[in-house]
Image 1 (cartoon, rainbow, N blue to C red):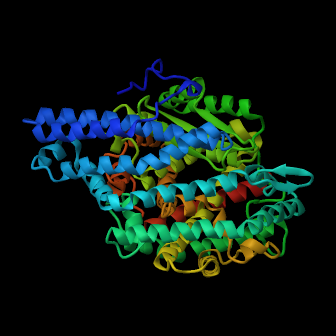
Image 2 (cartoon, one colour):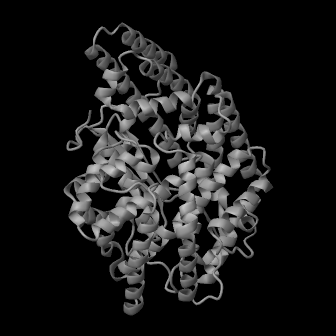
Image 3 (cartoon, rainbow, N blue to C red):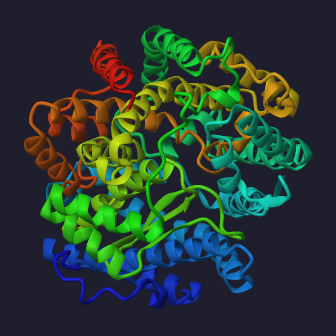
Length: 579
């Protein structure tokens, strides 16, 4: 496994290549592994088989990651599109091979000794994987990937006319968050007009996805896709009932606070009624923006990580040196931001779409949290399964780093840093109701898979009334009719991957509150959590870092209450100092 302190083995990102696997050869490799496992006469022989299996999986996982990354970087590149299509076609076949070996390990009479070696979490994850797959759904998985790619492709090629220019989605977003209200309104009108024009296609893709996923669930013996979705997310230490109780806590303790924050925001902006195009802006001066260009931003980031922790400093220097950052928006590049990883080299890759707004700093620190954790654990984990934790745990690393970088925001925003901190904390609290709305909506959708597009829009409107009662769209026809959710990539691409952000935010806020008392100790605890990778399930991981589980009674209320107190102080200071 790679040594994180030695970057000499890491190729530059532009030179990274992973050969497309030959399915027949991989099948033969898996057949040999299963035969060797059956023939293994002692514990050491079984461990050798698992090591070889893990090496094969790391190579295949790196190929998948690279194929999808290249396509997202250049959706118009026919070579990359073909490679991604090959990947989508082959992945279910590879899953069949992988699940077969996992079944053998789960049923092994030597399982207790293997669990003692690798930990119970691996077997819990494998059990979820086994329950979520049978060969009967292979072709369905291929079709699902194709439909997801259609959604990504559609949004990547969005061209939105605005004041004589054709902008993509990241570019129009900057105009929607500026200080001039008329400009924000005009930008939102342009953005949502594009969605109105493409409603039939967006509805078709999603309807086919819902029906396909429901069919897969029924083929596997689940009552609905809700149960299958939780298995695919590998949620092994909580269930839908726990999530429903958490959403109830959001409605009880966060929605009223969020409504009050929106009222104060309207007062600061000097508007009688807050409309949707006002929500992203917290004062009449507009949101603070980074003070320099892309290269300047990377230099300030290096200064920040140098000051924070030597491991973060060397990590980020390696990311820059090896070209493992693609952060500038351009036509043909897919929307959004994400972090992926290449286990064979032990390095991550950060993908983003900088547009000159404060979101650049937020997305950048967020994705670096993911990347740092991957890099730390990829060298120490004996199993691929443990390099990334489950999704909600991953988001603790990313959202945690957003907050732990707070003391260094002057590097990016200068005298406007305090405004950034106030806005970031405000947005973090306001996000909780939205995240809960997305999750609740998905439960409704998959509990009623036969619903029409109009009925789904009615579901979303009910979610907005419940979780976002302040929201007003006025003349933005598409979201006013219940179509806002079609902008949320996760709903199409990663079903049920959204409450994870709310759970993680509850933990990240705990990290931040602790850091205000002892920054060095908190940062060391954060690094230690990253080092643990995914060897434990979510609640055990957060508890290992001295954090309380979001599902514990009263935790969300306590964390939000403490955050509100700090926010009051920040708001008072900004008002007094005109920051």
